[in-house]
Each structure stands twice: as C-alpha cells, then as structure tokens.
Image (cartoon, rainbow, N blue to C red; front, side, top):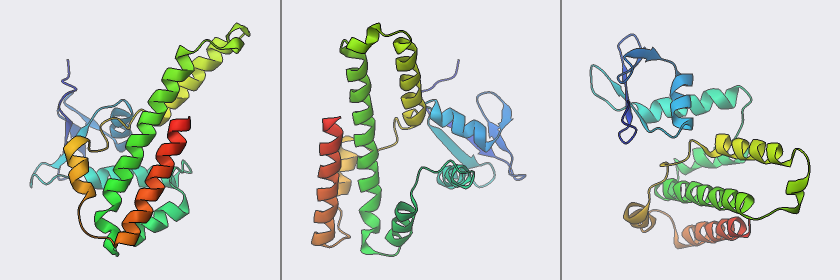
Length: 187
C-alpha cells in the first residue's frame, strides 16, 4: 500500500514522459491532477538533473483546465497575478493567496459540518438526502485538492512580516483578508 504521508514522487524522463515511482507506470497530467484532487501531495523531478519541476507542471495543469473552459480564475485575478511579478507586492502575494485558500478550506469545512449536524425541517422531504449527498460530493470535488496547499503556523506567520510592499498596500491586503474572514465566518 502506498504511503500517503510522503509526496508521490513522479520522475520526468528525457522523453518528457512522467513516471509514477509507486506504481511503476507512466502517468499523464490528468492523472497527476487526479492524485492532487484526491488529497495527495505530488513532487515531480527531472530524472537526469534532479531539478524539482512540480511548480512548472502544476501551472501547466491549471493552464490546461483554464483553456478548456473550466475557468476558476477570473481575468482580473490573472491580471493582478501578472502585475504582482513586477511590483513590490511580489513578496506579499503568495502569503495572501495561501491565507485566502486556508480561510476558504476552513469555511468549507465549517459549512459542511453545519450542513450535516443541524436537523433540517426539509429532511423529511422526499429526495432531500440524495440532494444533500450531491451537494456534499460537489463541495468535496471543488475543494478536495486544497488540503495541504497553504503554509500553516510559524511558516505563514513568518511570511506575513516580510518586507516588500508599502504600508498602505499591506494595510489594504489585511483589510481585504479581514473582510473575507468575516464573510466566511457568516457562512
């Protein structure tokens, strides 16, 4: 049985084929996306050089999904990401995104707990249980790949204090983050 504690090691051969070291077979980008959706951490390395190619392949997976019409990222978010590479905000953006996704995960977990723990007067309605299970499956499929994505604890806290943006920019980001937390807590 595979050890899901360690990242799944995928080796890229010179032919650009991707090799799953646990199952000893070749995999596609869609296979890797499936592993991630299932909650598995993945590490992709170049066999010859040993370079870590994980980020490159994850970005490729996102780009392919976006190009197929499975859009998750609005144009203004993509535009802001591109801008962040050329501004002082570059050091703040990764921590902001990680904290935002962490809040989203926490909010989703709380929503699922609330949805299943409170008696609902509609539960006597025929088909309600099937509808609830569909909604739960939908939420899990939407959020399933998020576990482990964001740094937690000291790593995140240490990153929040890094210099890079003006005090005004940092204050604006913190305000937006507080607003997101407030909205999620109301869910």
